[in-house]
Length: 536
Image (cartoon, rainbow, N blue to C red; front, top):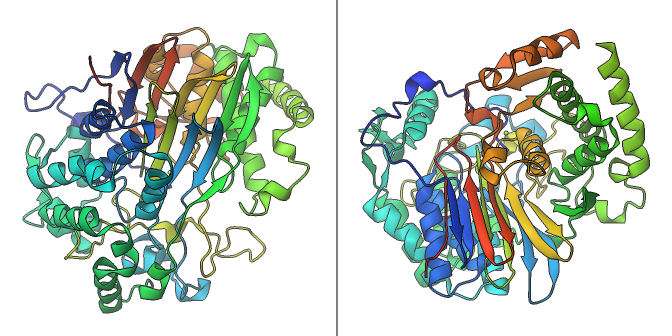
């Protein structure tokens, strides 16, 4: 959902430093499983499962914890999207937790620089409302219980990882320019060193108040008044009437397709599930010789499939509330996939910061959750009395074309790239998967699911990736691929953007799958994640 994450060079990361914890990337359990982008959040989710909670309880606890552990990626000031399989009702549905543009927002009132950083860049946060809705409707535990790990982490502190240090260093000037420097920089000036403990006592107090007073305090109580006053002091657009409207999430039907005997369920508009479905549909139609991503032919085909799917999404945006009424969803049809595959084959012969978590429990409940504050460190501003970063989703709207469904207007929702995905084998959920990474989200998920046909779960996640932009620029983990792959891509007219061996830019897949009564979790080695489940 962030537009372009910073390149994180390996020379910034001293992975041999004895202060650095090496998370458990693969885990197995018979009692449920959690995989998140930070090991402390994984522990929070597993704690809920061990305490009798279900997958929703674990996901909500982990989501709150990620806002503490990964402040550059998500938090109370952002938005949260969920794909849920609720076993009791036998329903699989998307929970659209889009944030909302403030009532006083207008395209002419926002200069380009105001959409990226500062108080005017933020939409009305929806994460608290979305997590409350999911917990109250589908969870088993109380809000105060699921907030305990996040409060504990904010009070006692979290270890600064090499990745967090590198991200902070890259966005240092933006943090220094905003008031968030007080919370996330040492003495408000420089990044906290790797291995040091970052404590967030102000955020701990905000979380504790939510545990005591409920999420309504964020939108209509004391926290809402503090946000209102701070926005007024700093020229922000959010006021108490915006918060009082409460951006409640909307339950939507997922988009779906069949693939190799599996049934894919993924996120509808405003998310990017349509793009993922089109990738699977085209892949089924191309010649078998072009389906192995590790060969030159397969890599070129992959780049073409990704580029074509994103071109179609760009050409056919839909208002999320209008989309269910569209009878002929062309991007999702097999006939269109056949046409696209033929066009891709002809070319072959010629020459966004976000976080994700996945959870399954023993009862059959499944949650894929993706949340964000948009860019790394969001708007780089935080209310001094509250301690969380505001998002910069005002940068995610269309500002020129008034007919565009995501044209910026009061109470509009921003365009998102999320695609939390559940895969069923027969009638039983087999896999839940997702990733952060803006437009790289769907391409990362697609590559991992295709690889799962022939590779172990960890090998499929760890495997080298590529992504192709609309401008035919292929970002690629080149040193982990065959040397003739780059040459083949260049011969077909692609521009090469060589990335690090395990690139932050190319997503961070968290997956959980179930085989009989055993759960396997995998956390992508590209970031700070871990997988874990309750023991015993």
